[in-house]
Length: 441
Image (cartoon, rainbow, N blue to C red):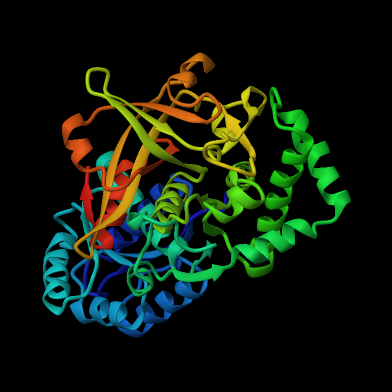
């Protein structure tokens, strides 16, 4: 995974304790490098506005997600203000807890001036050796990297809206304004034609590659063939149009007339794409936020059951969960889509998500305002017999959580929920804070 890029500029005045500022500069850079960031910084302190703006522009061009302005001594506030006004990138200011440097004194006036001018920023105070502070800074940087990862991203809506699912649809102007996401549409007909016209040899090769990796295989060869043709078609469209995120409508044209998208979506999510089902735009964005925060895949599923006593949430999906979330693909069976759901059929993945620390999240909208329910816990892998309690042919995640269960139910504002591996709670909270999204956690 590519390292997150961050810029660091340390400001000072020549008349002040530049020796302390220089020490702060290099200690901060060392601490940030220890957290596996790719750091861009000038070798020396920065004393004037022109140089500060120049470095900030240079770092932005190199692709940093954020710039930290370290206040090494008392500084002139206009240097910070003019830099933030000139260069459009997330900024944080950092004052050191050293009484000899008067860094906090500078922090007070800079922070207050920025607030009065309405200039967005984050204010940090503390030592470069503070574990608590560095964790806060790391979360901020990773939240900024999510913002950068979403900005100018194209989201492909395949097939349009599933009837009746209000909470899957979004205001395209709001998406552009808040996230910088461009929503584009691809008709189901194009996917169908690409699938039908896929070279036979390509499909044979996909079968040779993938089928030995799975456990038992129930669907007939014709169903497997169509499922992989949809995978081939979607992947081709994604590559041709540079899509990394998609919301795919399966019902009811494709699932009843050709094949379900389940296996195609599962494999694409395994391979680094972010693909939601049922044309769920908020689902795709939620999943991509989780992917960017964790550096790994995220799943799409339905909130199927919540056990108040056990504090266990069961998330079930009609077949498109990423198969690698099982831990071992050989433990994933390929089953047949249920007749009641699909007249044409399709291959589904059947497994229980592996044991892991996880973070769950779902973006939603209430009266036009964006919100996110966010909580963490642990998935507990279950024997395949337990899948029968819901749908044995579908993948499932069993998540134990530390959260008020009744409160959680009230924060379910969709039939869908998403989760990723790892504890990304504070990173996504910071992201919501930066984007002024109400966070329910």
